[in-house]
Image 1 (cartoon, rainbow, N blue to C red):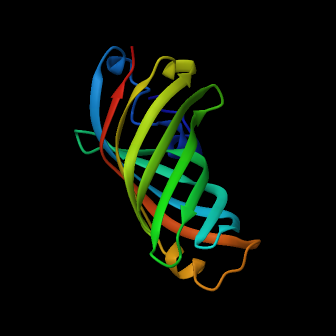
Image 2: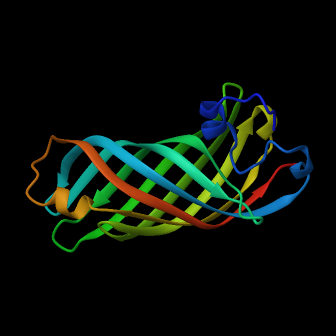
Amino acid sequence: MKDGRSSLNKAIGILLLLCSSQLYGEERNLRAMMHWEAEGGIYSIGTNQMLFLGVMEGILYVETEEGDLDGAFIECPVSQKVNPETGESTATGHCQITVGAEDVVYAEFDCKGKIGDCRGQFRLVEGIGRFEGVSGGSDIRIRSILGVLFKGMASGSIIRSGEGIALLPNLKVIIP
C-alpha cells in the first residue's frame, strides 16, 4: 500500500487486500461482510407472487487470514421473487465491486429461503485493471427485515430504504 493514500481511498481502495503483488497467482481464503441499503419497487406478478426490483449498495468489508480488515464499494442490482403467503423467496443479483477508477470486480449471486434470510452462492465472474482474470466465490447469506416491509404493500410500492447484511464466510479469491 502507498503511505500517502487518503482515508477515503483506503476505505474503498482495497478489495480483499488484492492490491498486494504477493497475491497474484495465488488463491486466498477470506471472510467478508456487506452492510447494505436497498431501494426499489415491489410489483405483483401473480396471485401469491411479488417481485422486488432494486439496488443494494454499501461497503464490502473483508477480513484476511491474518485478521486485517479493509473494504470496497459494492453495488448490486437485484431481482427478488417473494410469496407473501408462505414467506418463500428467491433472489439473483449482479454486483460491481469498485476498488478504484480502473480496478473493478464483477460478481453475481443467487439465493433462496424465507423472506429476510436468503442463502446461496456468490461468484466472482471477471475483473478489470489489476483484477483481470479474477475468479472464486463463497456461500452467501443475505439477511434483512424485508418480510416486515412486504406485508401490506401494494403493487407499485416503492421501498426507499431497506437495510440488511450479506455474509460471505468462505470467500475464495484467485488472481492468475
